[in-house]
Length: 270
Image (cartoon, rainbow, N blue to C red; front, side, top):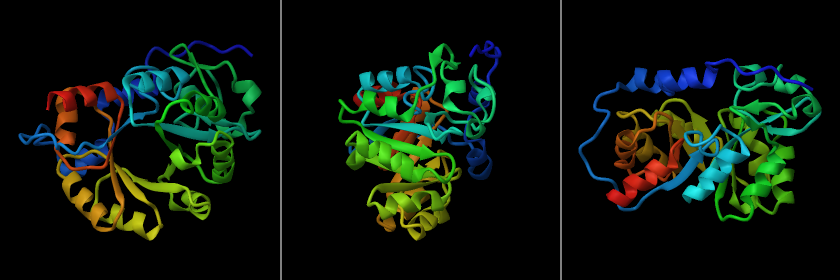
């Protein structure tokens, strides 16, 4: 099947230009964006967002390889399911938004998607992605964008012998239930670092709570999450060395970032 070329300005690029995590900024405010404290010596895990979106097209094998080359502690990836049950790495529900493919993923079989690209890199299945990650010692964070295929994801992870290294994460708590029943680590994701996100994660039986970054909300979120015995993770989607330094001043457990190389540079200079 042939695919038309991508539009010059993709949805991802538009969102990146605007600054992801706007909802958090709106609630908690932007200033002070850059803190004056020091980076904690007990560093968090550094996890590459969508592989390493700031270094290669997101959710592609190239992004995963770049993240591993940088030396990440873990890789975060988005997982969706096609109409014929293939597990595909892709963030949005519609292929047209950020690839040369067309249609809703859930309504499209894999043989009509295979060959589509994001910025010149082919879309990749979860199976292929796990083959790439398996030889490393990196942890794996799989964000399931919908319900109904958690068991299929767990089966694929188990086939690669990666169950102990995998955390299943989602915005919707019911998506996590099959993983919890199988004894697999889970995390609840929220858009804003509110104290009740930690409460919801604990109530859902999750092992971790993850939120987008907002300067004034992170300290309380981390404290509330830790008080409940959970891992505190933060998504940092607007990545410069200065803003990553600001995040690292907080005593979080996991930093998910588009530029893991920047995070390691900041930690090395601290």
